[in-house]
Length: 388
Image 1 (cartoon, rainbow, N blue to C red):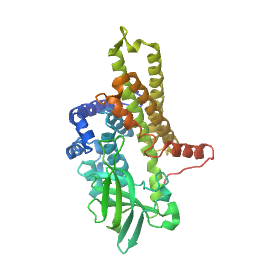
Image 2 (image 1 turned 180 degrees about the horizontal axis):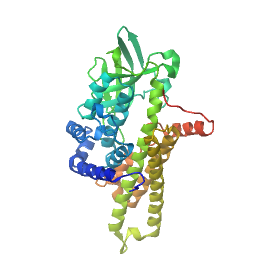
Image 3 (image 1 turned 135 degrees about the vertical axis):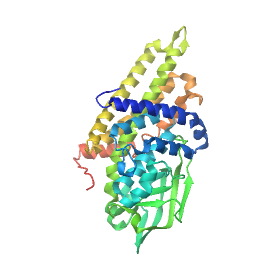
Image 4 (image 1 turned 60 degrees about the horizontal axis):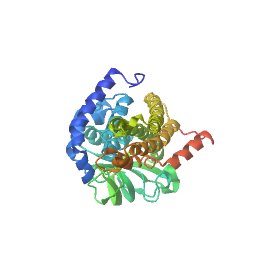
């Protein structure tokens, strides 16, 4: 492990996390993959261990640790080989909770952030809509102020934790005529009248609950506005950089797990009197995959180090997700090929890993959108700036 980024304390944390996941999570993964439901007790255990509070202020029950503790959590979550379980955990901790921490009032943080850190509440982030994914400015959901309330109407889709969450962080237009300058952020209780959710059936990430959510005249207190009215778009854009780095880290960790499994398999599988790791064609294919993974991993660590210092790394995080998720898909395909027919069997981990990996180039901004963002930055010299 690269000591440039990871201290002895980081390594001790990684080992304790591995032990926890092997004991408390891995025995349940197959059941959760089949049922599509992650049992509530594991959220509470994550909270008890402090895993949801790594990056959050001590004032609200967090640990206020550096970003590399989060990197370790993301990496080890990928190695339980359930992209859905991992997504449920990090979507709660780093999508919903990021907005609550950054934009929520002190009262909102006490009511939602603290129990989220403790694992007593589950959150989801609702931005994507059926008529527009990465086109955040084109969202149609509205929030109309009426006295000391807002009335929310619209729909969201592809929402991780969209069924079983206790609260929703929702982007809606308070001033539709202003385009992206008219978006605001709200926090809404799950039991608010007028919310309905429909569970979606997915190719992969089968342990997680992904939903389409409808808001039909949902009335919330005006105090549930998070941050300033009309500032939702820059809030979302600023946090997108973190989400994309998260997905980049997930990708290199997923590829590393696939390579570790394939290497072990190749050292044991024999054909024509020798193990298959002795065939030059397979050795060189493995070397190419491993090299690609290492390049992405080291790049992601560099971006994480810069983000940890407070730098606004929107270009670098976008590159991280674009290239790392592409790499992970290619590595997963190659590793499945190393296993031959066994790779196609559900009794082996590569079939699930390949399905789960395919979400990487889609979620959090498709690869096509990311290429356009990079083009705007590099070719058109567009300067993205953090919200103030």
